[in-house]
Image (spheres, rainbow, N blue to C red):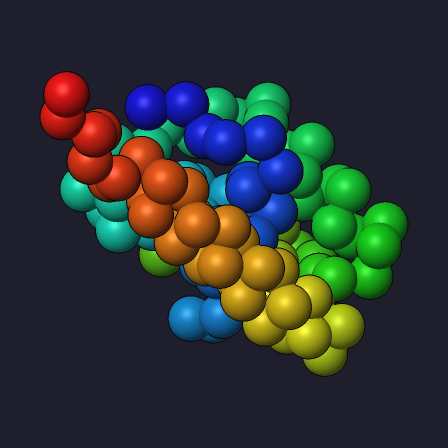
Length: 109
């Protein structure tokens, strides 16, 4: 399933709310939590990570994976936590409104 436009950043922040992760861990976390419904491409994730770093929503540092590979680990900042709270609330309200509209029964004639 394709992601809705504008949702990748908030989903990545949600993943990082569980702790620092490298790119593959973020993708795996999102795919696991969506029961495989969401597929996040590497390029889209990298663009989102760079965009959020520029906006100071996340910070990154180099580290070692469990397999002994070098990887960039991303961590949410205080600004990122505030952004996650605000965007989660707005997105949840938006989805609730859409669900209400889409589940409305049609009038019978």
